[in-house]
Image 1 (cartoon, rainbow, N blue to C red):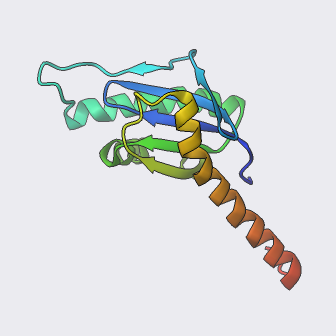
Image 2 (image 1 turned 90 degrees about the vertical axis):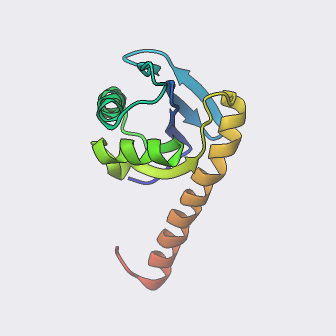
Length: 141
């Protein structure tokens, strides 16, 4: 599967987890079939490992619904520990083409698109470079 200008952006926040369908740098928030996912708020303010694991399994199941319907590539956005927790339970790991560190739950979809698109473009460039190299060298892959 090659990257395209149509992909998903999964924004992992401590309180809210959002899925976007993206077209180049234009993001549309998905508000259906489990998204956005609202994190349970424990009295301590932080989720323990068990709660975080349960939350990430819920996110994976919701993302899986969309991925099954339209298997697009995924860019995961969030703090490193959130990305790590999600990666540990993610069913479709091969779909991830990029990661952007930082909590962007307060970032507008327009601004997030501008942050994520260069990462997607970089991956696309690498895929095209590899394909051209294979054509020139005669390597069928």
